[in-house]
Amino acid sequence: MATTSIFPGESPDIQTRLALADDALILGHRTSEWTGHAPLLEEELALANIALDLIGQARALYQAAGELTGHSEDELAFLRDPAAFRNALIVELPNGDFAFTIARLFFVSVASDRRWRAGFDDPALSAVAEKAMKETAYHIRHAAEWLIRLGDGTGESHRRAQEAVDALWPYTGEITDNRAAWLQAVAPVLIRATLQQPKDSWMQSGGRDGRHTEHLGHLLAEMQILPRTFPGARW
Image (cartoon, rainbow, N blue to C red; front, side):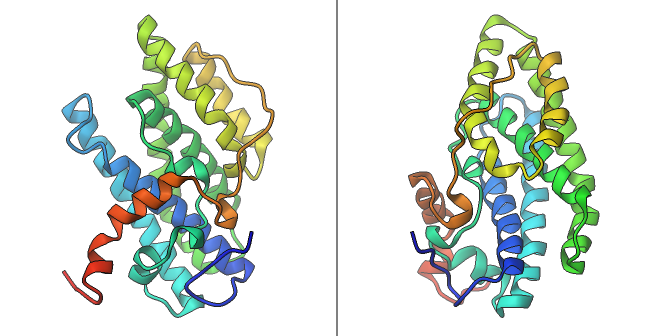
């Protein structure tokens, strides 16, 4: 399937910057949806801060992408259609229950941490990574602590955590450049959480090429409504 973009042609450098930015933006938006709905006030504040971290990373990455495309961060975030987004499918899935959100945050944060710490030849991405890796380390710690509490908690919390891990596992192939390193970081937390690690088999893919679930279109319709309704508006 041909991909679409708001600008002609996408070099590997543009694709990398957009993929990183889109992952951060979409996961940040999903995480922000817990505002007013988290199980504890403390957790509501924690998730809101994590969402702000991710959206801040997205802004820096869109600015870096804009250096190559000539577009502003607002244009890249708000004026692209779903097929032009390069985020992994896992970040666009609906939040589900709290266990699903925590398991996803853990899996994606571990993958992001591996990527930030691997280093970049691109100076713009290296500058973003220097700050992002500190934030992502906190995201991992927070999500891991919750996943352990849920998995090694009550029978109900264990069931929900295991169902979340099982449902998300087929989407993790798209976020892991180094699968062995990712598994090495994830496995000890699953063991402490008394959760079974699913076997690797067929993996979902397509997000990096602009082939998304129907959920992304609904998310973007909500996120982009103001700039699309009032072009050029500033607030």
